[in-house]
Length: 222
View 1 (cartoon, rainbow, N blue to C red):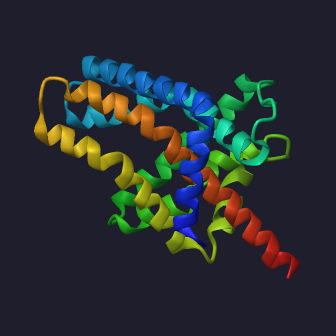
View 2 (cartoon, one colour; view 1 turned 90 degrees about the horizontal axis):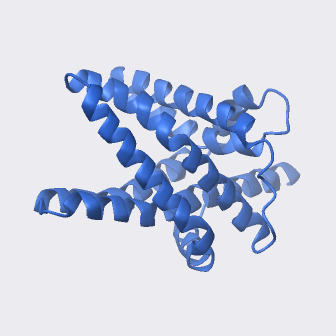
């Protein structure tokens, strides 16, 4: 698994298809900002802020997340051909939202169990939100997305976790620097950076998903 190739190839694709991807990055950043503002109004303490942050944040950001994943799958596989995923998006969104909630519950439960299980669940189920979109025409696609993600990551857990942490570092380091500087427009710049970086992060994740799929098929054929 060539992680450096995935990072480089994702950057090349982003430069080529940014007109399709970047608007959804800004949509995602705006949705996250609105969700955070709403949480700040209703949360009475830090515990409730965390609770409502997960629920409301997921609901507000799930639609642009889903479209970003679909666009990433499309441009990696089909390039400049017209998109073909606009039909049935409402039903697909419900399954995607349920998958993301289940994914977050598993991670949160794992983190409560001495942290390590949380990282384990994060690694093996990282591709479940992509799979629920990619398996949309198959039976039991919701439950199958978690099974297929675990099967996909088997034998490639550490490369998957490495990619996960690399993408987290890419998007979070500038955010932490801006928060540390703490000047007047820091929050606005954080939103702009999130909007710009998010499509690249999604491309990296989807590119790794497709690469792992190809490797598994080669292993099965061999």
